[in-house]
Image 1 (tube, one colour):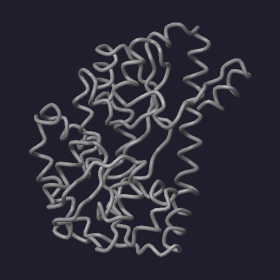
Image 2 (tube, one colour; image 1 turned 90 degrees about the vertical axis):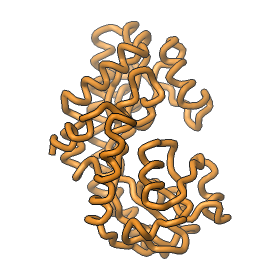
Image 3 (cartoon, one colour; image 1 turned 90 degrees about the horizontal axis):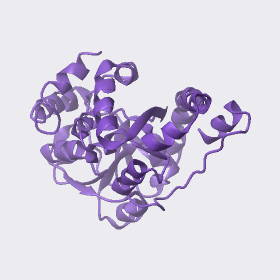
Length: 284
């Protein structure tokens, strides 16, 4: 987005990127934006759950909520998401800018044991992100989910602290997990994007023209990055992952979907407002 902002504005606008959590954790980033000391935060959809009025964003990582990429894109453009976003914006002094790129759907890799049906996960230690929906689902499938930071994950897999990990294919390949993982399971069970939130204070300091530059640059970045992912990156990473010795396992998707739907029904009204799950399912 930074490069696109410069191009769209004719070099009049630049964006400084600070990576690696140098400004603190997720909650700190959101707080800094509310105060106006941080302009942007690039983060996963579900991190909005830490915000006031943000609990409904837990639904975004309920396994198999989205049937496919088209279904997920319908959600991105839906009034349902607009309502969720509006509540968070008003309660936290934020502006939702939108997704910066599609991400490959989340799947599983394991060290020693292939997984074909939910029962195969019994007693396996699986690293997950800090997400209640994912954690609860893996627990219901019999696994022992463990929250491990991205920076510590390779070592956790290498030492056997965890038996496998929940992640997307591209990140699994680029993180060299082929060195410590033997099996890749194509669950493709969670579609989610990295999105940009902006400080409302910072947004309101911009002229209408500057706001337009930002909006246009984000739209162009999303299209370019998503096209690259699906036309080149995803297939390349899958091929190279296998060439490096990782075995591709076809899971019994129907068994996983059926189990997930039964478990997800229990989340309704607990992790997010009652009826939201079915509303989003109905978009397909």
